[in-house]
Image: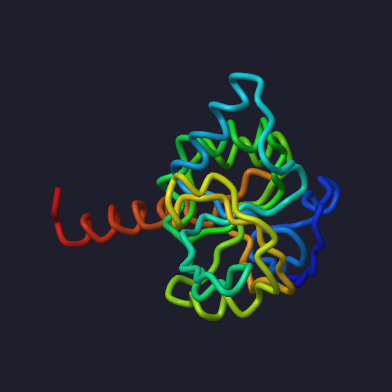
Amino acid sequence: MAIYRLTTPISELQIRKLKVNDVIYVTGTIVTARDQAHKRALQHHKEGKELPINLEGLAVFHCGPIVKKEDDGWIIVAAGPTTSTRMDIFEDEFIKNFKTRVVIGKGGMGNRTTEAMHRYGAVYGAFTGGAAVLAAKSIRAVKAVEWFDLGMPEALWILDAEDFGPLTIAIDSHNNNLFEDIKSRTRNNRKLIYEKLGIQ
């Protein structure tokens, strides 16, 4: 296990050095995006429309933050990760089209996303669920909010972060996926246990 501190925009070369179980901290621009933001971004791409922000080299956070208005700006109160499997149907195309380098969330992602990360150079950084206030402490400022019509949790919150993490690399760009490995080992162990118990 190695620890890396990365600053956006992150290059593909930097991503290719990372392995599962490494730990990273991200400084710079992080953009929140959940289901509806992914869907709209991909629709914009299909229609030839530009996104409000160039996502290449950035970190995308599966998060619906709690945000409060303060004077002329916004303050992030809590920023816990959303379960990433909900975005699995979008993430491969998202990585392909927008060249995001780090996807942050909880619960892992499947084979489609793993293959896209291998092909285009991206990683999945797992953030601890239930640590929403800790995540908020790493956010220096809200730079902008886009697509607010989708609602607070679904909008694109463009954040300036400092040492956001720790994020455990659970999917790297070399086709390694800790979540899928655990599932496979669990299936194998279950089979052995059933055999010992005489259960078909």
